[in-house]
Length: 83
Image (cartoon, rainbow, N blue to C red; front, side):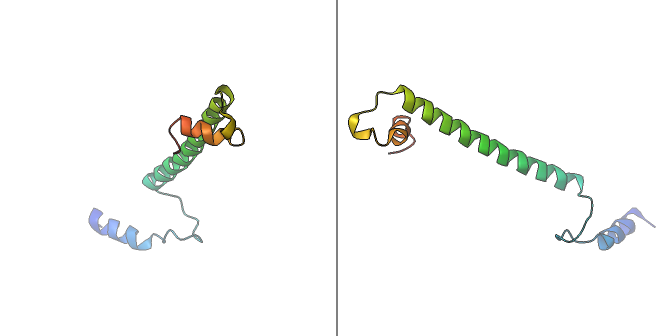
């Protein structure tokens, strides 16, 4: 059997990637999922780092009396994150 015919045969015999199928992921799909997970974790880490920066900034600033009830909002505005 030629490579082309064999490829077509394997394509037809491969089950779909539905949720009920327990098949090994192809290398490209596994890499995509790994990158997607890393991106999500990186985004969560970035959000945490930004919130830490806002909290540290609020603790170090001399917050005006009219903003004493919302120090984090003042720190975000000071950092240019909020108008």
